[in-house]
Picture 1 (spheres, helix red, strand yellow):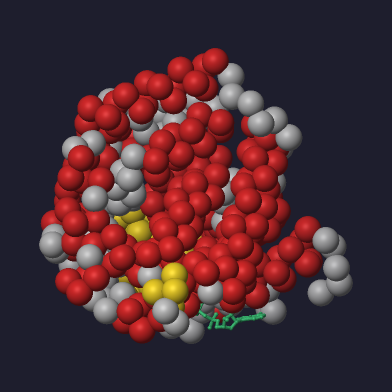
Picture 2 (cartoon, protein in one colour):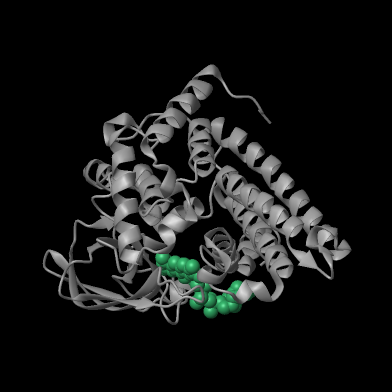
Length: 397
Ligand SMILES: Cc1cc2nc3c(=O)[nH]c(=O)nc-3n(C[C@H](O)[C@H](O)[C@H](O)COP(=O)(O)OP(=O)(O)OC[C@H]3O[C@@H](n4cnc5c(N)ncnc54)[C@H](O)[C@@H]3O)c2cc1C
């Protein structure tokens, strides 16, 4: 494992930190700034700020310059993630495009797809959604029902997707649909990944409300929507292989950014435990809560070393493939456990809204609520364990 940064890495850190110091206003770093904004307002401010950052050269850190990237290294990308979190910078509005679609396009897209898709998403000209899950197809993705019938030079799509992140703000959706029949018991056959314009009459997005009150995802209905036959990623009928590649990016190659974010959250939770009273003394002195906080910190530090190990391997060009499931399982559990520690310390106060508790506490609550979803999306914990058992450890099916 390599724990050092090169001179180029440190120069990059200085350059990006200095850009953030100048271009990220102090108020945008606080929860209070975002607390009184509607979801649409927040989205549009973040979209523009991120586009400005891309215009300054801080986007697509590891991607080739010919496609609008910076041509940097995986270590620089880890530094970029660390600095974004350190500065409390807004998170990306285009996570499905940036983290999942772009590396898949880089790997198996046509030259034309690389040249059009990647620069546009880097500059937030196109916000991407992921249309995999359906009401009857989540973990069992191959059970999907959405149909794409070929009529001349286009597909005609009919069906429904659900849990679509950014459904209300999406411009395009990479979606899985049946372009052919399954081959006997092989449900994975006959599926294609299509790149569909969401701004057309046959596509309707409806919001879904989360337990935090936000509507970050929704349902998408396709009624005779169309998509040119050229807009297939990975080739017709190869959707399953394309999706497995994309999911390995979704599950993540390194968790440095998650570690940095959760460690910051842990510091805030520990500070909260020191100033919150429990049975007449500080919650931090409660023997059970102290144990929980200590356990959570140990998990976090293990996550840090796991992440450095993974980063070293990817920097050396190793393809992690299905091992990405181990990282996803590790960080998702660490995050959920930390959220639980916070809710135990907060007790009934956990239920209060922003106005009663102040924006910073509300941020912790939002994170704790959000942590519950991370053991579900991108494949649930049970699914990750099955992948690790069968594909990494080679255990019998
Ligand atoms: C915040 C969030 C954002 C999301 N964003 C998107 C998005 O943008 N696009 C998209 O397509 N989807 C998205 N999803 C959907 C997500 O991918 C699915 O929720 C997930 O794949 C699980 O599917 P399901 O909800 O249908 O649950 P099910 O598949 O019905 O699973 C229910 C339970 O059964 C367990 N289970 C199922 N099968 C097995 C098995 N074979 N062995 C053991 N246990 C099993 C699961 O682990 C789970 O605990 C999002 C989900 C969340 C929570």
